Image (cartoon, rainbow, N blue to C red; front, top):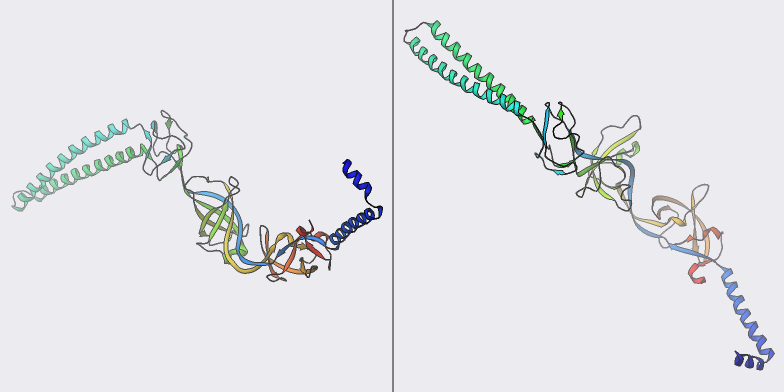
Length: 364
């Protein structure tokens, strides 16, 4: 510092003054250059393909869901599953005590054996009397009596067989099985409980594939058809979407809401989605190809619509535009701009017609 100070003293006063003036002029010229244009962020009008979609809200539904109820009364002998577990079609879930029905079945089987023996005997009697009648050795009345007894024996066998089959069906009802592959719900009874016919035992829900049932405005009816793809979003996974395919379009409009019921199927192999949940749907109905687009920030709302500032020869010029589809961060320009033009993306709040502008990064 001492060395610098000594040498500074040796500089002529006129030379020092000139240096100070030169530094002032440089700083002033930079300030003037910066004030001469308004720094803005620019964006180029580009073309791209935009997907047309219709939005709706709906509810996730299980493709198959059933509440299991016994068809007979009895005591729950055993529960063969854990609630919330995966079960297969035909898998045994509940057993109802069947001792009484087994005893009745054995009694019917014994009665049937006796009735069949009687039927066989009556059949032999009838055949013998029929031959004797043909030889004119007995009267027709005696033959007819044997035939009547044969028919009575046959009716007894048929009646007992029907009663036996009925007991067998009841015995089947003491074994309650899964009607399809699915997940079991809450267990509503325990082993040892007495249940009446119709008592709710548990539910089985098939969730590998779900339906999303949603409604769309009546005006959309001409743009919806089976096979269209849809994106489904749920609150539990806000950053994700699930693909679904339209499988049902209602043949009629709901008169109270003037809306159309639509259903789409979506795969759910991991069981991440649950029936009953809320979901939003974007239904894809078309593609607009090679349309001009700009960033949403470039739009300036006016009393009559929208405008943007187009930059030409470093000057800003207001341009009225008609917009089409709007996507997050992007908007279609239906009229007013063409590909390659530059518009002010941000910073247009400080811009007026004819102002000179420059890219913000060049002013640093």
